[in-house]
Length: 481
Image (cartoon, rainbow, N blue to C red; front, top):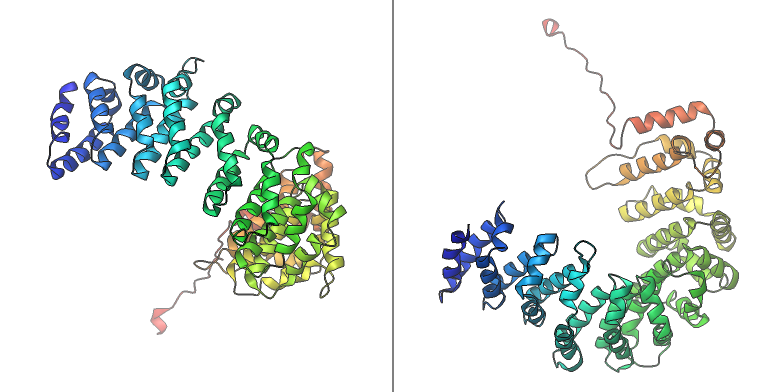
């Protein structure tokens, strides 16, 4: 088996670029074959990996790193990595001028750190040596290459998000990362915000960011008088949108009155990107029980009034953004709160008594994305008891539900319509396990209008998303022609 690699090793050492690229191509085929992984674990395989990691060809370095990544996915490969002394070469590859090489090296490191063999954190020990960490830390701290610095920060964020134990090992460099929020370099701050947003995907990360007052700093950016601070607003508001579903009740103070005051202002923005983000952020906050309760109690005359204004906007893009965000609010786990926000919209709207007329008019428009947002609202509405009742008490809703939109290329309405019917029928086919199932199904049947209507909806589902009615073929009597 080892002899198989000898010609390729020789060609990889050639000074002829064409010979090297051809060898790289054949090597990729061989290592991707059924015996490829076994070849890697041979002495010549190790020689190939060492040669490839230091090879002047970017394609060769990327190929070798992709093979090393395979080693992190099983016991034999991980033990091979431990015994081969290749990890220092991988650490150096993170500093490569080529982004592709650097990214693949980071994947190997993260893969190794995530792996364990028979309960032993071999991968962690392999990555977190004093030499390896100091080598990377020096780059993050001292390098003049901004891109390279943030590649290293990005690597440590990925490692920190693997587990609480690894977070502790990375914390010293994460402190240096968040300290960069206090620089005057807006582009650098944007990079930090992106990485902070990923840290905020874990409970450990949120606690760390709270302990270092990062959310306070981000909120202050929304009201900064720096002439370039506006460049940060969209990223900061988007971060708070994603964060809303992650926090616990005792972390709600992250969202201060200053934040909501800024959000109200952004809902009046002329910048369409920031405005769309603000609309979506309001919906994501309203999707949580704590968030919707807070909005209704403290911000119904500010944030919510501005948000509701887009329900009947003449701008299709803004109306679409609002309807998707309002669907988020209707999916709030607390049905009493979702019913309340629906009532508030009706009470606030000046041109219509409720959202329903707005929704039903949309299905006559040619705007595909807008129709999709209208279906999203109805789908969210019928997931609650009050919402199902609200829908079926509307004259003509049941008849409209049985009508099929034209199934044409690029038209998603037929699929959205089918899923809406399926969502309605879940009350019958999959009654809630949190209550008496028979009673729940019986209640839904009565709301829909009785067993005959339910049978017709069942038949609709059996026909599938795309239904073409059977055409009657009339025979021709050719003798009479």
